[in-house]
Length: 606
Image 1: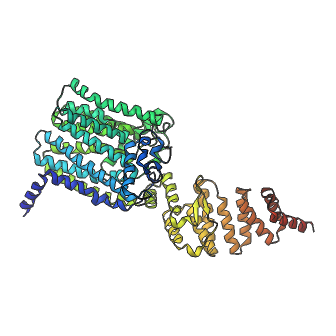
Image 2 (image 1 turned 180 degrees about the vertical axis):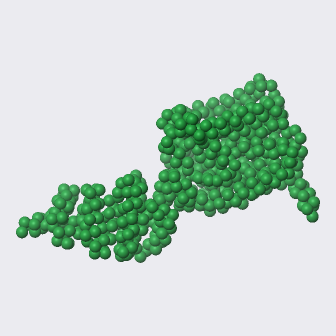
Image 3 (image 1 turned 90 degrees about the vertical axis):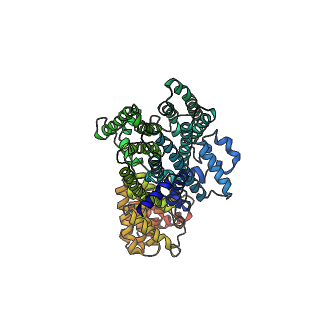
């Protein structure tokens, strides 16, 4: 029975169409659930609010204007991605962009990339000395599945924004396939150049393939380097045309000033990233959607352990690749290493960009990493053991990917779970809080001010209709127990329901949390605490809370009104007088303020 199963497996694997079908279906089994997911983060700017994708008449502008790429003037030029967004919007035919079709497109592009990589890997492995057809096909199949299921691709596949990474990879793999199948004719060669230029128009991360083409001609077609150089010129010319045109459209090459203040320090701070990228290429957790916490961190000293480790890794891999290239049997492993390094260059801040690292930056380098591993495995004496280990690793990756895909369901899930995984990242925490208050059930009662992100309370607050708000705030507070805006909102909710005994401890805690987290106190929190104390008839604490709020913001008109009302109703006219005098200056047309002020002044004169 075991022999029969083994023969059946060999028979199936011997068919390229079967391997391709298996690889093509795998993304839908793991990443296919994203068709039920929402737009998140930059998707709102690039797709949902981007008016340029809502008509194919805007195609000329998409290729000539940076503002057509996004609803915000972001310094990026990805015309093919934006064009494809427009096609998807047109195909769906709905007034507003629908997330499902964009997520489906991402899964399809990822599937196509994996199938093309399988084809490329098979072409490479069939050229290797001593590699039989079955072993080559199994190795190529494992690479295709590994590329499909490595958890590090979750960002590229699940985030609609990253369609540019997927498209660039597909066109690069298509160009590479044409070069490997090239037998000297013009058609295949021109197709490779065209695919390469399309990759550039998808994302600038594809540019290094122009150099990779030279190594294909020299290392695998065995051409003299002079002829290989001539054949590489059109690729370099396509790269130059794209780079110049991109600079002309954007108006600059860099996205921002150097992250670490100076160019040299930024490059030093990039060296520790090398070890992190190696870990991520191996599919080893932890993962995160934002490495922004690296920005603003204390600059690394050149002779620090992290910098020297990263530099040593780069030098060792580079030196090993050069040594292996000179040995025919190991040349593919060297090519895979070189590929990984080449495609990391555009994100190495050699031209300043807005991030130190991101997982989506590994989508193209991952192909070279897997090719190198596959080449090493085929050169090992015990290929069966290597294949078994690879299969087990892919199973582990599949489990990790099934967990990672759930992060992208919506912004609350993405930012809350990511922030809990990586509490050091302030931006993730802030995005998580914003996402909670942006929920539909929350917007009728609470909001965060756009510029300051301070809590804003709705004028009309009906606690009887806010049942889901309590559930949301309770969940949010369990996730972020030290977040003062969530604690404050929960306290206000209790106060509006007349549950002052529950509200007061929460609001007192919120005042402490605001000081601890931000270093400054929030006067609005003290105002709400005072209101709860009034309901509880603890007038002394209410008065003290209003006074604290006014010490923090002396011109806070609502706080002045509430404090003046409290003192007036309590017949504490000496305390009410300064507040009423200030209100008369701030609201000179408010006759009620004037009436009360005159009444208080008269009472004090008696």
